[in-house]
Each structure stands twice: as structure tokens, then as C-alpha cells.
Length: 137
Image 1 (cartoon, helix red, strand yellow):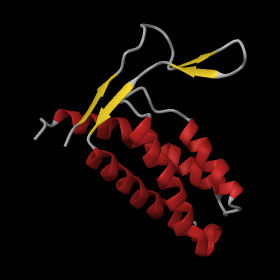
Image 2: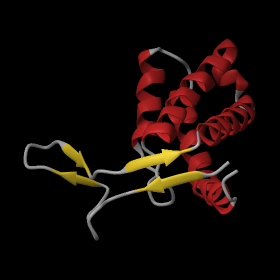
Image 3: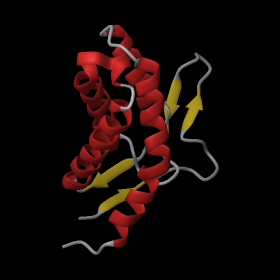
Image 4: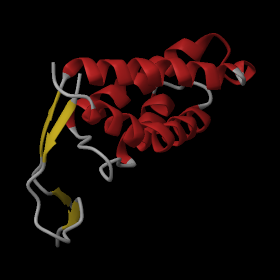
């Protein structure tokens, strides 16, 4: 199962462009991928995050699984809608995790968001390369 991307962007233009009104504009990028790759990566993220955060189970108490589920849902949505391969990992999904966890008044929001970001920085681009090195079936 391979992840295929096709981005149409102008050379040397950043992924996000600040506009004069303070809004951020994204360059157009069509992301084509195999849904099972996204689901597989999201499950891997969920499993690894649970393992990592379990080490601080006193921080999360009975809310550990809920915290992991919130983070995994946001991460999976990012992979499905925005991630386009190496160089396209954005900070927004991880700040979204922090905000969502705080809004839900769940414990360990900062710890969970940071662990999520560190995991993604270490594995997502590498996994994407593996997906794309396999020929389509």
C-alpha cells in the first residue's frame, strides 16, 4: 500500500504564506494517498503514544485512553487531509491537540501534545518513504 502525493506549488514559496490581513494562506496541494496507509499510521501513532504516556499514568489517571484518542483523531485527520510527504509535517495538528485537550479539561495536555509531536518528527516522514518505496498492488 503506497501513499502518493502530487503537490502543485510554486518554487521557493513556503507551505504557508502570511497575508496582509494576518491570515495564513496555504499553497494548493492535492494529496492522494491510500486510506489504509493513513489508518495504519494513525494506529501506529495511537499505540506508540499510549505506550509513551502510560509511563506517566499518574498524570493521566483514568483519562489516559481518552487523551490518546483525542490526539489520534486529530493526527489521523491531519494525515488524511494535509500531510503530503517529507517536509509537510506542520505544527498545527499538535497545537490543535493541546487546545482540544485543554478545552476538554483533560490532564497532561502539554505532555501529550509534545509526545505526539516528537513521535511524528521521528517517524512520519520515514514511514511515508517506506510506503512510497513499495510498488502499488
